[in-house]
Picture (cartoon, rainbow, N blue to C red):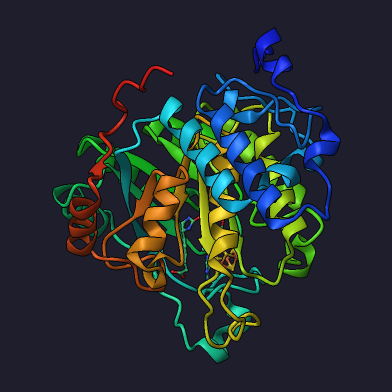
Length: 387
Ligand code: SAM
Ligand code: DTB
Ligand code: SF4
């Protein structure tokens, strides 16, 4: 069972009417938050605003039976309360000082047949983006970049290719298997993102030693068709199933700021947190608007939505690594710190994402020093603190 509901916790329940009056005045609202904070101190309560659900802050193990209503209730908590709860859970499941450093390399730039409206690498928008397609990088050049990443403290190397899928790419897959083996020989975790793969391809990657496969569901099932028409949500989920069945860690997250609504961010969180096993990694991308793509002129997402998504992910999937992915370059250090406080514990570092800029190694080292953060060790997270 995911939660231990004790008599003491049930006794802590206050009448719902006392806390759910929408006309509650400022002072009462304040003391409501305080009362809940007081009780959180011993992490032993039922959420009075939602007595049907035990407060997730008491979680001692992951669960995957969340409803959309429960997720929306968590997402819409008063923000400081949500961050506090996420932070409390984060400390129970992880060492809060540790943040995983991951470096990304585009091993096949541009020329993609898909129509993802946010993407610089789709051929559909090539006239506007001006991005030329390139050939696949050589194994040597990839391993050289991985060595630089390792020497700068990265423990995971992620290789991305602008492909719809791996059909008819037998040679490329063999090349990529060699890259994976080389990265693993450097003592790093290896991740790839190559579009859709089948069960056989997943097994081949597993045999090469692949640690994780990145394949984002991106948004809610409902909003997805307004962003991508060339492949379905279910096809995305099928690939995730092949990855999981092959014994490879699943890295699947989303992209925010596409024009979606709160219910779509809740839908995204619902999809990943109700998979049979949670993804080991959940990347949160904020749209980097690319000139020439259909979403090139979108206004930036409010940071509070990013923070709510990070914090809610931490509450729903307590063991998962929550990764701040695209969009970090334009976030202030203080905003990033708030995300770390709310449970984010991985970043991409090292000058370049796929086609856009990333925060550099030195810049991130300095930030870590200022905030008392340290790079997560590969494979062996420090023992988690005892609750
Ligand atoms: N082609 C593969 C695929 O689509 O799975 C792998 C690469 S794709 C670029 C990986 C992810 O990067 C996307 O699913 C999306 O979440 C994110 N991404 C791509 N372009 C982005 C942008 N302009 N801003 C933010 N995130 C972006
Ligand atoms: C993920 O979720 N984000 C990364 C990684 N996985 C492959 C990619 C972000 C791409 C940002 C836009 C670009 O650089 O083109
Ligand atoms: Fe292709 Fe991936 Fe870009 Fe979509 S996100 S256009 S599949 S490279």
